[in-house]
Length: 379
Image (cartoon, rainbow, N blue to C red; front, side):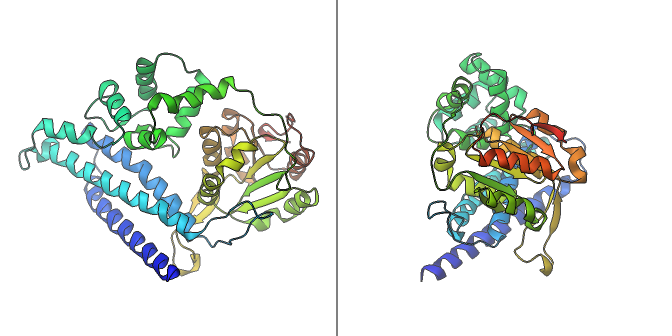
């Protein structure tokens, strides 16, 4: 009965998401050639972009085949129920954002004469799109009651006015990576609420301040699961010799085929990853671009697309979530598009197997301060 219930819940969730996305498409379609939109409507659309990107990742994760196994009985892998829970949250956020878009449409000049709505009601609706009182008050007082989306620069200035100039430039950058994880172009009020959670804005921001003043751990633990290498590539067959080399060196290798899968797995195993977030314990390798699909059977007519930002997406996630673990982008001709690694701490790129093997060997030897692999197009 549990299996039947899980399947039914999955189908209901996917059906609800499909219906909501279809309604969104129907609403957006008339605006695809628009050159001048009301700012309030643009804000609502930008906020939708973050939610759709997050939903897409979770759908990809759900569509991938999974194996329930562990490393030495401890590291948990993805199960359908975990993804279904995330998709349920996505559907609720999509439905809410759809309501906001409809409300914005009803208040812009084109519709105002046909559907008059008192402006004070519109203000109350927009600022009450968040249930966290602290987020609500900050957004209302420092960004505006009618604003749903702001650039990262404007958000940073508002934060400075509210809390004072106590965040370093590096902390501000990490915060921007966290709040604009999908590079939509700024911060939506819904994204800020997810980041703050049930606490206060200052408590959430404090973690980014403390990160700069807290030295990285240098102690490597004696743990049978370590050292660990997390490898993300849509074609694991490309890395057979390197993976064999790593395992021959005593490194536990976890292979994922999409950004979506590895991010959900990291969220499920956050405590373990935080406890062992050192260069001598856990490292990452990712390709730079990969083909991804929204369906578990690509041969059945699924939509397959080339994700050209896959490598940087991993970098943004790691640094935005305050992970110090090294990341090496390993690719071929796409190496010319990896200059972004110079903008991220403990990150490098290469197309040479020897560099990868040295990177792995340093992990096997539990080294903490090797630098040879860092930077763009390491030879």
